[in-house]
Image 1 (cartoon, rainbow over the protein chains, first blue to last red):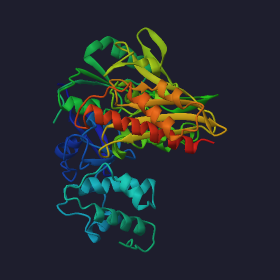
Image 2 (image 1 turned 90 degrees about the horizontal axis):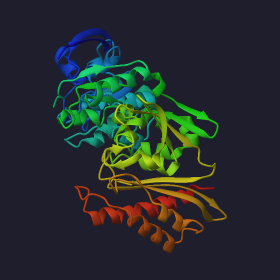
Image 3 (image 1 turned 90 degrees about the vertical axis):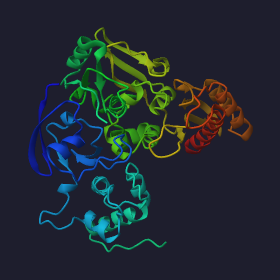
Image 4 (image 1 turned 120 degrees about the vertical axis):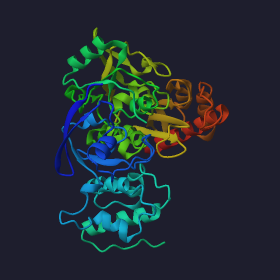
Length: 166
Length: 287
């Protein structure tokens, strides 16, 4: 099958590559660009481990073809640290609140939480639960994932993070 | 899991898309959000030789208000429905249902056109379209035509779409101000199709139901309008006996498949409960 030339902006860098139309975006990111922070989990659009930000939308990159992303702007977990290399608020939140156990789901969790906080900077716990409902954690560490996102929201809003009473 | 090989086309106009689909024939499939088709392609249950991606066709996008009708472009995503002030104001039942479809990531990609045109009995929007009296605008090699949602669904994955035709927009008459609405969906988990679901749009006058339409999702190989159930509640104040009568009338037309969501008897039983809950919640919202 003839290959198609694609260009896109990934984590701030202009990139290009030759892909078959059937190449999934997640494979282009991991194999062509060697950005292996984006994980392949279920491959069936359920788990959210492959979530990236595509033109301001959280998408499961296992269910978008790389050719569809031609000309678009993508952010992956590799583009989430602050410009000086320090951890972003969300990354810090996951670290401080123990928002990961095995860590496999974490890149997708952080990418989805990133867009959630862009759209809703002060989410309630219920907003977070609904907003994160497309991401599965097989360690079932959801409580701390929610705390991690609350921590990040507080930090981004310049308010003190207060743990909700149990 | 990687789909089989195909050629990718990205037309920039509706005319080009229709021509491509007509020229390529049965080997081509239109690609909207892709969240039904791409998973099927990964499983090799769908093996189209050509995909015609509709994302660049500007005519298929947008939500517009013309007089007493809302026209929604087929490529409008579930996410766009959820954040639309126009939809919140005029057709809030679409937001209630859209929020119950799949998950946030899927809703950024999944479109209303794909949801209604695919003919999957598990899709949520078709029953709403029937309840709201929507019309679908179709475009194909023979020109344009309109088909009522109530006449569109012929069987599981069989619709009134002819080869080479695509659904371009949906026209929905705005329900009267003060109408009550509810979509009750029983599902096992986030992202699942309905075990059973019911859509209700009604108006009340003097404490009694004045008009009512009831739709059913995933309780037959097509979405259903439960006309006898709706007629049973008109003129009543939705007392307990009437609700039971409506549920029984709705259950009488249900013919769900037995699957991992439960046996036929269970799905019909909970289908009746969804009808009762939707009626009560819709009546509570009507003014």
